[in-house]
Length: 183
Image (cartoon, rainbow, N blue to C red; front, side, top):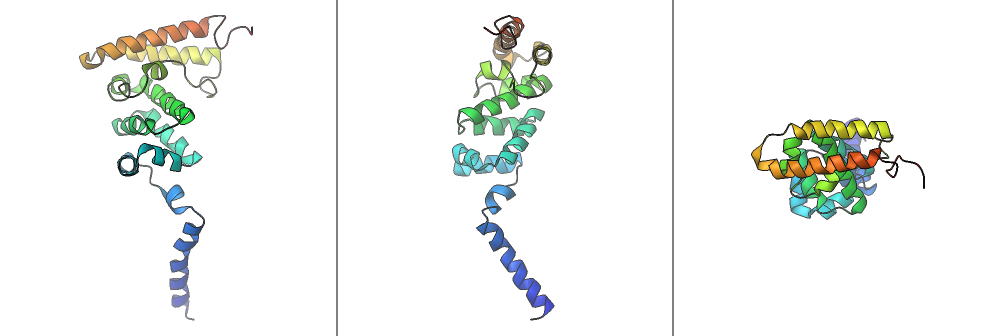
């Protein structure tokens, strides 16, 4: 067999080997907002959510946290097909975006996701918010960002979010809060 023939056979077999290992669809899925939205519309949010690997979930959440309109749309559409754990993680990612682009979050995500989740407690297991001081700072930054929103189309969501942020901040600072004295 010539070297060329050998390479041709090898190149033909490699995709089959990856497919047999179950890695073509799950591992090679392009994680762009356009691809994600197409897959959600074609296959449904629940199927797309169930096919994402742990590493892909981490990548998706990091993109959502950046707050681009397209990734926030992915979060809102994907949310409808997630279970409780993944739903909480999506909401937490949108909550992180709140400090960067509060009007955009209130406009795009707050219509489909609970405002209590977006504006409430962050993920207290996240190293960014795993202490009282970090959580208070996080909530304060979000409160300042949301307070600056002047867009009329999100005025009601803004007020609701500010109420949730203040209530959550007060709970964090209380003795009965998540960082208070053990009962």
